[in-house]
Length: 374
Ligand SMILES: NC(=O)c1ccc[n+]([C@@H]2O[C@H](COP(=O)([O-])OP(=O)(O)OC[C@H]3O[C@@H](n4cnc5c(N)ncnc54)[C@H](O)[C@@H]3O)[C@@H](O)[C@H]2O)c1
Image (cartoon, rainbow, N blue to C red; front, side, top):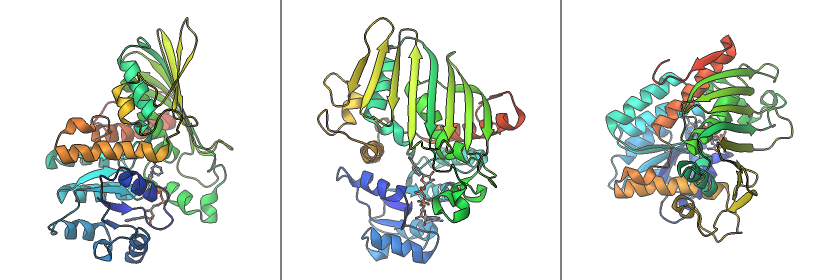
């Protein structure tokens, strides 16, 4: 595996590295870790890589690796959003599979083009929508599919953070800086950073697609051009209705992604604060708390669990589940092995969600999520 991004001081690069290597099945051997040759070399040194496979930039990475007798099989893209599309395109066209962090691209137009490139090259493409890797999220999905809840009527998904409550990008916070700049973040601020996670989680668990939405999108941080808060009403194809909250100015909130799904017969709740638990609330029965690692859980949940029940697993393991499924599919050539790994369809849907929420926020009223249209 190679990596683009994830150099010194990066948040998610080391998480990808830990997740990729957790099960001892993926070798992390190459990369381009920064926006300059110098920062790339510093990043590669931190990971202890052979300097010969630490490249000045991602163009050099793909050009050199494709000439090697032992090239990388895939690249993890962990750089800021504006790098996702050009790096993914170059990797796919050089013959490499891509596991990209979200959002898929910076704009919807890029995502639509990327979908064409994935189809034309036939190379595997996956997205690390982290929360889909949790055992109990996968179990929730299985419960909905098995009809435990009955027909889905209501979906409430929220993702609140508070770290952008003040305009810390003006005080040179590097993370905040690129996330609040359209040149590096793309069209979405908070919607692109965390709203897409909430949208993807709701669709992943329910198996239902959002077909229309109505959003109020705000900018609280002074001087910001991108959104930092959004409240979105959702209509799903199967008739369910939903509410999505995405906020980075909810002071005091940490990383509060939470999903509640209500069917005709029962509701379920999953929260990132207690990710190894799922609460099932049947209409006329006592509530049940289901724990990861318990006997009787779905195969999907058991395959995503490494430790006996009561031994907490978290973000690294959730990421590692996505890596394991993606790598297994590359090794066997069986795309079915990555059935639970979000792909380019989910990438386009995520970018469509941001685009439509912004459009609804600007013009008011309901907007369709019709795919393929800009
Ligand atoms: N899946 C998740 O839960 C999750 C969580 C956090 C971040 N992310 C995503 O990961 C990406 C990075 O976020 P972060 O918080 O780690 O950012 P960060 O600012 O902490 O790190 C970004 C890294 O990319 C490097 N970089 C910048 N331009 C580059 C280029 N042209 N080529 C190679 N490297 C380059 C920087 O030097 C830095 O090392 C973003 O797209 C973000 O949306 C996903």
